[in-house]
Image 1 (tube, one colour):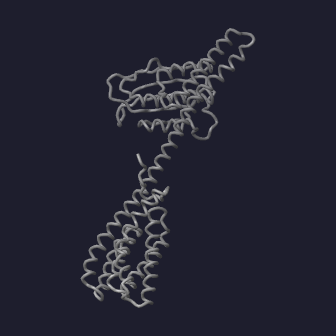
Image 2: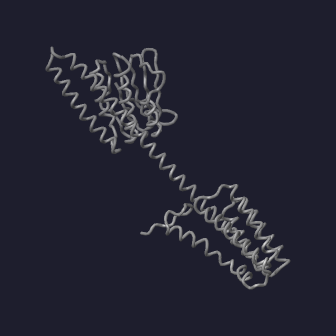
Image 3: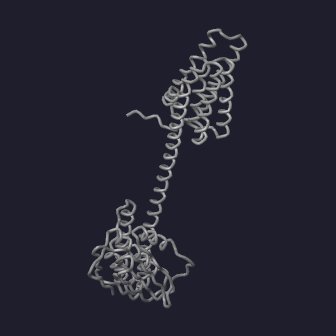
Length: 386
């Protein structure tokens, strides 16, 4: 399929240059009257030379102004300057050389409509028609009266075309911006996923490696079990990363609860984790966001809190905004040394907001508490927690 000539963009090759040039030069048909007037010999030599030079300058300025508007437009100051040149040449030539030159006002209206801002064009096009008619009263009122409608129609038509070109350019820029934002959002999503995946898995690997080191050489069998667990966690982490990169991974809350029990136990933290959760009426995306919250919370407990106890609760509540499923992770540790929310909590907040949920995290009297809430469908049964 041949490539379409783009609107509002400079020509990219010779074909597009020819198409855009042909679209502009075809309108030069209205110059036949001034050319015939010059060739006819009805003027003196000085008038003919002056008229030829004036016509050449007029056509050159017109082509430069309109052609550049279809690609890389001039600055507004240059546009008004060149438009001023046309505004002077058209009346002067028509006044001094006769009614055959009134057709120049058609080009003046086209230039105004194509290059001026819409509000300015609405005033300039009628003004050019009025000036043309006043000059026609001196030379040929009948021809001037016939050209008034043509000047207005073509001028406002070109104003519409110019506005269409500007809108097309703005839409093209907006589409490019949206594509850039989408790419940035995807990079942020991937960064959050990798942080959540690797932070949890690497913390567990570190803990089990320390345990295996302490068990050697006195308890080689137990150390071997820890090494086997490290291998299993590493393989799972690799699989999770592959799934996250392809965009298909959705963690399940039941699996994360089981993983939390293993991670807390390995870190020698007394864990209270609920059994199989009741997720009836909970959408998959909502469950995934809650599972990420549990993973991040447990990772923080293991890595930063120094806690000896951790309780995970999963409860349903009725609120003024409707039923919600609430995940609470509470420990008796110090809560880490950070002075503000880290990347993990920031990413969790964004995840939960996308499914209509909220996140609260902060120190309590004896430890640290993270509470994640997500909306659910109305249910009569209430899920239980430990």
